[in-house]
Image (cartoon, rainbow, N blue to C red; front, side, top):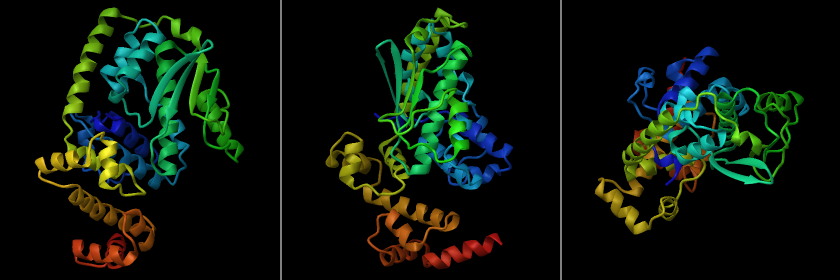
Length: 344
């Protein structure tokens, strides 16, 4: 199973929307394309998908005209309470080492898009972050957010005396000195750019430090609740929803049936059967995605028709235009001109 196969709390989207509103962005614009209302973000029983959160991130970056380094700032807002029972469980653990083990055990209950791994080597603890397979701006934003959010969690549970020994990032060193300073301020140490992996590294002695809010009974109760919540969120997504998530997240290439089956660790025949039992097919889901995504590109991007066609898996602009006219009754450029006129 992937992190994307689980539903999640809307708390992270609420945090992103609140940040956007503080900087003058409209909540409705930030939520565009998610089918979510601002009221739903405060419902303690509501659940959202990873693709809905990703859409809000994309909207925030587009509306803010900001670089992916905005993730450094936003990641610092992810206090333990944002995560609900998962966050309270970490604070209740006896030591930081126990909290790290607990955190990774229930990682799908977080808002991470990165795959996070842990190892202990030569007296140092290493947290490795493998970024999601997304377009560069989104990928860098989410990696920056996930790494600074992880650091914020450690600082919140252990205290401000915690410090990193080293930060490694795959990305090349930023050309602007102000950008390097942004990373240094976020991590408390200047990162090593152009590294082989994305890593937070710290002295292993911190793993033995007792947590100030340790409570064995509360830790056990939270662990039991996390087990139940994990199963609940995993079981709610059907095959159709999971396929739609992967289609939404792979923004530059439409996967083939075999690719999607491999992502879901199943065979093409089994995937076809699972979708048929839910009243649909892979071809139909791709068609629906292409239709929805094409209108989104035409309304809210400056991409040319040829580039939109390529992103949506069409061999050329003519094939895309014919399909788009079949879906909407008008040519792509006519649709774009109409939408532009409606905004004037």
